Amino acid sequence: MGNTGSGADPGLYGPESVTWQCHGDPMMWIAGVRALYLQALHPRAVRGVTENSDFRRDAWGRLMRTADFVGTLTYGTTEAAERAGRRVRALHRTLTATDPATGCTFRIDDPELLLWIHCAQIDSFLHVLRRSGVALTPAQADRYVDENRVNARLVGLDPAAVPADTAQLAAYFEAVRPALAAGPDARAVDDFLRGPPVHPLLVPGRNLLWRPLAGLAYGSLPGWAHQLYGRPAPTPRSVTRRLRLTGRLLRSIPAGLRWKLPPGHILKAMRRMGPGSRPSPYTLRTSAAILDRPGRA
Image (cartoon, rainbow, N blue to C red; front, side, top):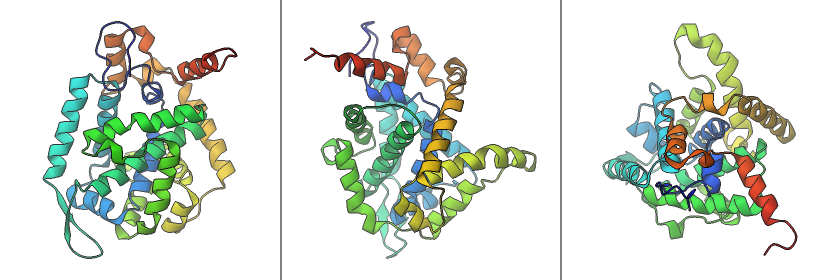
C-alpha cells in the first residue's frame, strides 16, 4: 500500500490506504456493534458464536479482542498482522457447531460463514463512517472495500471470492438475504446488546451511555434487518442526524487521548512510521481535492 519514505515496515495497509486513515475514527466502536447486529442474522454464523464462546459473560472481552485484531491488521507490522491471522485460522480449524435448522455439524471455517462475517463487518465500518460524516468519495469507498480483502485472506478466505467494491458488496447482500433470519440466537444477541449485564453500581452508566449507542448502531441497520428483528427503528433521517452529532462529539475528544487506550496500535504505528503517518480522514479529503484539480491526469 506504500509508506512514508521512512524505510519502516508499513504493515499490510500503510498510511496511503483508506483503511489506515479511517480505522482510527472513534465511530468504529458503533460500527462494530452494528456489525454484531448484522452478523447475528445469519443462523449458522451466530450459532457458531453461541456454541464456541461465552459472549454473555465475556462480551467486553470479545469486543476488545475483535478491536485488537482489527487494530493489529491495520496498524501492526506485516509480521504481527500475519501472525494474528495464523492464530485466528488455527483456532477456527478446531471449532464446529450445530446447524439450528438441520442438527448437522458444520465447521466454523466454512468459507460461506467467513464471507458473511467479513462482509457484515466491512459494510458496517464503511456505512457508519460515511453516514457519520467521514466524506469518502465513491472511489475511496471502493478502495476501502478492495483493501480489506487483505484481512479476508488472513481469516482464511480467497480474496478473489470476496467483494472488491461497493457494488459487489451490495450484490452480495442481495444474494444472501433469503438465508437470513432472526432466530433465537439472534434475539439473544439483540437482548444482550440492549442491556448487557454489568455490576449493579454500573447500571446507571450503562443506561446513560451504552443503550443510546447500541440503539444508534441498531438504528443504522438497513430496513430489512429491522424487519427481521421485528422491532422498529427511528426514521433514517433521525438516525443520520444522531450519527453525525455523535461523530462530532466523539471526534472532539483529542485523538492523542483516545489512542492511548489499550492496546495502543495507532500510537505504536506512528512511532514506527513517523508523524506523517497520523491517521485522519482529512488526509483523504485533501488527497481527493488535489487529484480533482483541473489539468491533473
